[in-house]
Image 1: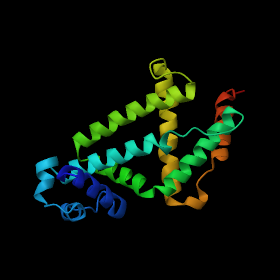
Image 2 (image 1 turned 45 degrees about the vertical axis):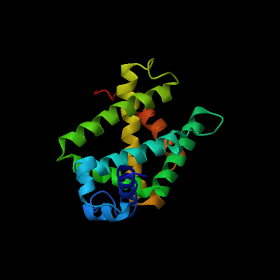
Image 3 (image 1 turned 60 degrees about the vertical axis):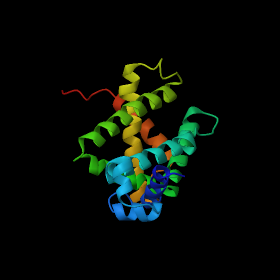
Length: 195
């Protein structure tokens, strides 16, 4: 490998071992066995290198387990099983999800990173909405992108935080499915009338 590839591999190891916030230029250079100056030459900054390493790890995840579709006889069973797999994935790849949270926090003071993360959310909303609606990304409606996609991403973030914080109390796929059903029932009930 060349210095650039060595740096990406070293940055990924650092993300796995130390996380986004605690990784220093020296840590990456040591892990990659290259000079600290190589980071600036190839990537411009520690943040740019860590971002590329994190995005590459996310792409690897998405190409593998990230796109798993649950198994079951009904849509509800498949949806619940998908969540069970995601929750296991949050725990198995804890470092990746914590690094994502740390990058989000860092992005609040980095307009460039914030723009990249926002674009990733837009793409994810469309992909998820299309998957849930059973249509292609080109055919999914903007209404479904904004509604289905946004709700699923909100659930994903919330469930991820619950699983990372208190794994024993994180909801199961069946509980999430039941909770969504109950929410739909409550939203469908007519508003109480006065009098």
